[in-house]
Length: 500
Image (cartoon, rainbow, N blue to C red; front, side, top):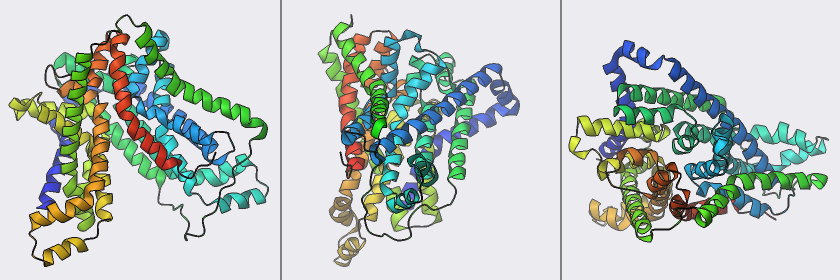
């Protein structure tokens, strides 16, 4: 039974890829060539690849550089800087882009898009690199310094090779997010494949052109995933023994303390203070700044209801896969678990298009209904729930269930009285992660939400698209407040052990 449930969840996650494959078969090679091999598609592909490559390079430099300053140098206020460098995660990228474009209308260029998305996604590299720095053996660095190597040489020849996996993982997340980004780039008027898919959908209502562009996006995602696996390789970076815990001696910056503080202040100012300052300005000076508290409360309630339902549905769907991956290890369990990650690796707009097609062709009565929207959220955010559920199952010894069975307790009773209480922390953590992700989700909600349904993200999008920044500000503020707890938890988990 568990295998069948996990297989059904995997099938749901594969739906976007199946939709693309079916669409390609229906159109045929000649149709694909006609729709894909066009100058406009080549231009969009070039824009997308150039932005992804540039963002990966910039975030890698920002993430590794700031992580080294916080974790390996004597820069003052390391705890404070750590929190401030993680804080931009509480700001959705489309909110930051709206803030920037309201302050600098001429930012609708490649350079502007590169600046905004790099600042928004740099924490995805910073966090794993900080964690990797925490796990490095300081003895290697001390030996290198003892041999006369400078701090730069120690970083380049000793530390950087050991950070390879963390940097690749972080930059992969950045690349996938940039590929999937719609709101921020649409606000900045920078055309990419994702924005073009949305435009095609709105113009032709899920026509073949939109589906073929979505297929190109999926291919780019698969290329990124394979490239990351290839670059990561099989080389190990861990110590062979646990050894004794050793305190890391940070590098004294001396005369470079001032420039280091200036770099950190610039990064924090551009990524955090500028967007927040714009929000405050919208409240104070916006001509549309009068807050309709009833509308805001209703939109917040709708968002919380959808997020709560999505968290419950996604966590329930994650249970059989997480359980199977631990209790019945093997090729089938591994295949079913990894399959669920594929759906979340493709852009949200591809998932939405697939569900639109299913809703129109197979179940027309479900098109633009809450169940379809919840299904999209589940496909997009299943891994967040599966990872935490699996961790909880790993820490739950099967002996408790065995003892209950030996006492004659039925399977449903064991599930309710023994298994679920033991898994409760992991289930709660997974549900919280999904909840917070849905609060700020924009693309799938725009395409799939029932007519007349507005969330905080879509209400902000409507107001900011009409340049009514004062009216958009309250929705942005509520999203930030709801996202803040997850950001604080991330900051606290990695911050432990840092000294000022």
